[in-house]
Image (cartoon, rainbow, N blue to C red):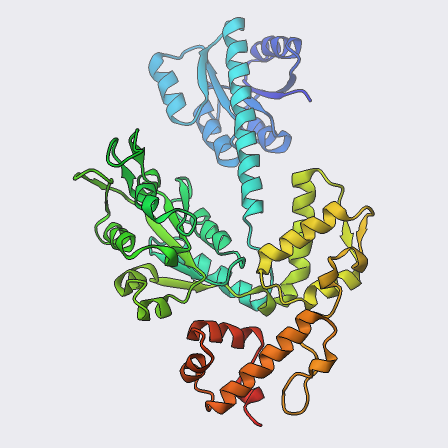
Length: 461
């Protein structure tokens, strides 16, 4: 497809001369004889490059430049027969790509055109890649729960406050963190992610704060830490609950003082970073156990955001499935698939212990393994073809094990019955029941949420 070049010049001879050069080189020419006409064409025709005269009656080139840059990021090359070095510098300062004298030297003009079009191509590619990244990390859903999360993101993003994102594994905590950064005043700076659970204890301080050459065995080169890399940007501490107390103390110092100290160095380095943290652990429980610093918890949780599990936003599953079908088709060059109503109903019945990550993996597996254009119930993994909900309960609220259709259903119904019985025996005291059955209180809370056990619905004998 030919690149389109808009020439805005009040002199017909100059426009004709430029038309000959432009069309001879295989570009498409668009001409305008005044500033207002040029602005109209720039908006309507979406050219790839604008050649703009400075001296024109009525509206001069600088005013046209300002108006065009307000509506488009198209590169603009200013041309003038009365220009000086100062004029050219002023044009570039105002946003022009380059400045050339009139009448333009053909070789100089063609080099400038090629350079400007190449920059436009690179800019378009960057925008496309950035959009692809945004789509990949887009928060999807229309449920009340996800709208509440989006509202929290909207309020938190423009500030510099630390954010603590909590939720089960696979619910999309990273997506929330990226949405906060993308909508913040730091969006043009780096978003640096650190998975605190994936880095060995002996290396995490070096990863976060850097180290000097020779500071420990294997430190053959100086390393810049994640906090320095994210200067003026955002650090995302994923699985922050897995940090050691020693590392927690150093992170606290960064939050309090805005300073880091590389391993093996006594020199402090100032950093300006926003910290977003995420965890699937109950940090208040970890504080009680002595595994997490309370002062760091308060520093991190200035704005707490809780991301709901997928089983609490079932109405979002069809939207998510369609989003994954479209995204995976683009990423892998697959033909687009649709999903049969019975298959969608089966997906909505599941508990999705792995949450959105598990759902996405399931959709991807179906796309790869399905030969037709429609994903039917029979194309789903066998475990998903049955009703994933608990079997019917009797009038005392206890699951009927005999109604279980699969081994998983039987196990879940038996576990639910066991928990309800123990809770009744201990007068619904969560701490006492957790101690009796030998499980952490946070785990018992998760079980109660998973099986939807409550004193109101299961309290009577």
